[in-house]
Image (cartoon, rainbow, N blue to C red; front, side, top):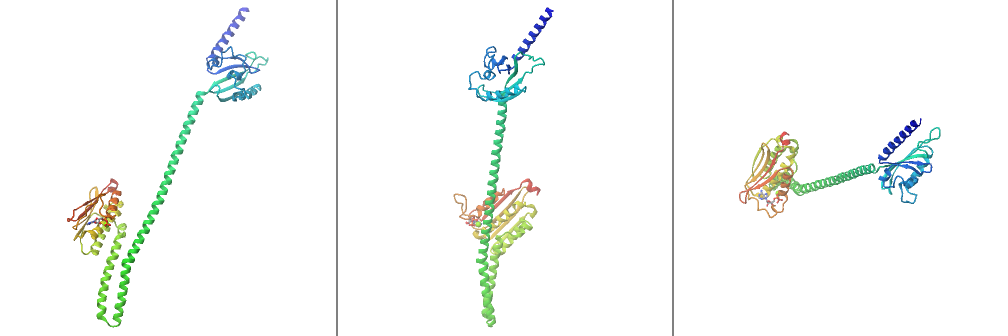
Length: 397
Ligand SMILES: Nc1ncnc2c1ncn2[C@@H]1O[C@H](COP(=O)(O)OP(=O)(O)O)[C@@H](O)[C@H]1O
Ligand SMILES: [Mg+2]
């Protein structure tokens, strides 16, 4: 009998030792607490946490176990332990997390009541509860890092959105400015046309009307001999007016450009030019069909030809003016040449005189991917050529 009891006691002692070994190997602080919140036993983690030695902390209050150097008693941990303990008294487990500034760790504290068996016995004598304190710092830091990363990404997103909104705002105001400029340019152009019509055609038509009234009056008085020279002067005036109106019309965009294409419009421009400026022999070599020139170049080619022909009429004093439009395998070329006095020497900034015509042409050509070459010397006339290399999409078009 005695032998059996001894074996049993030894088995219990071994089990207790095994259990202590297991508890001691944990990184959490695990302690048994009596009815007065005092430590009955604690595992070795307390030493790893540098809160005292296992034997010395027995009897300490659970708060003082974790905060051995006095913290005034009214710290956050004390408050949470108090309410947790109250719950534990009511046989309810309690768990809370907090960042403890004394321990400098994020901790998770669990208070679990030890329930007595039907005979009122508890497994560990006067132990009423188990307190487990886990170090959550690493997890806490990981969570903080994750939050910081999310926050950083959020801030980046805010910056990106603000930049996009700012860009949209800018392009909106740029668009508003551009359309305002467009309206202003249109108004300016309308004023110019109105002024030109009034100053040239308007004045001439008034003079024609007056001459015809005078001639009619002379006819009525049977003064036919006086009326005849007046009428032939008036015919001259009508001819001049036609020329003026043609010049104004040539400056405007002909509907041919939109209806047929730039090759047809250029042919029309050359015919009008030849009729308006009868002193020039005009040669036209349009070796390209309307459909062969990409739409995106139509207006530019037409405006270039208009300006170059105007220049020839205004400045060249030539006898012969030639216009060419060629479509090569991968380029389009417009050329206007004359046999007049030739271009003056360009000034230091590369422009000729104070006019804007040539400068505008060069800009227009560049904006559409073309290149303008001005050739010819003083005495040998002028040749201006604009080349546009064609992109693959142009060739498919
Ligand atoms: N075909 C030409 N023959 C001779 N000189 C020319 C010719 N084209 C242009 N020029 C000269 O180049 C100058 C600049 O031309 P441009 O820029 O078109 O301005 P604008 O025609 O308003 O004077 C002209 O003033 C003229 O002196
Ligand atoms: Mg000009």
